[in-house]
Image: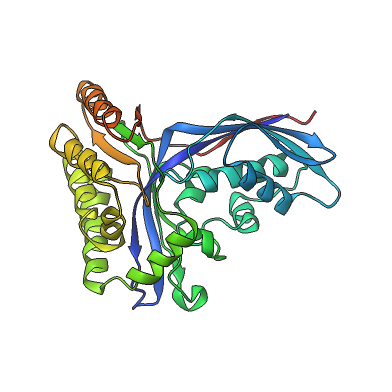
Length: 321
């Protein structure tokens, strides 16, 4: 029996959806301590996923992509992740299933090889790197002439972009609001990339400047105020601005409320609707959690969690039966 615990992640922003200087995509993200996905898996004659989850189909497909001919696996979903909310559940589900098969059958594949086999990381490499390494992550995207189009990971067969920077995320509190609604996904996501790209070069340059000269120094110096200002800036430019514009009013209200009430910075993860706030004080974080939970209870419903950054990747443990 093999157990895999894989982390969720925040996707703070895509970097370059202009591609004028030859590369596209790139991204910035934070691996989260919770919520997380947990599965157990064992050798079997058939391929089966047990447990009520919208992610079961992804796990089944991923397992089949890496299983040796004639072999099977039984996967039990112990703890689920919400899907299509901006926490990267699809990548974690696919990699968890693939990693379990890799371990059970001694295939010896790297996380990157598994990601390519199951078709994850084609736009953002953050989820794959979160599974492999954890921490705060910046990836460098893809050569545009090889990718050939502006498209989301689900519609891209590119390998994950190279990790340009992996740093330890400080011991800051993260307030995580998960409204009871879904973000853009699948065909709708593809359409948005087609509609809004290429992003003006000036906005790509603006975001790149903020990452290199504000966010990264703030991370290294553990300057939560500057880090938070960088997050707030992301919401106003580049592809993230377009993602923010798609959100329901209450999601935008929650983000603004966090920014005004104790969070150094607050933003939308990926296509949302998850809203996160970076908070220094545990007391302020608890107060913010309570107030935002009240906002969700009065509107869409949902859950507000307190979490932190996770500076390690997925955990894989157990042995063959």
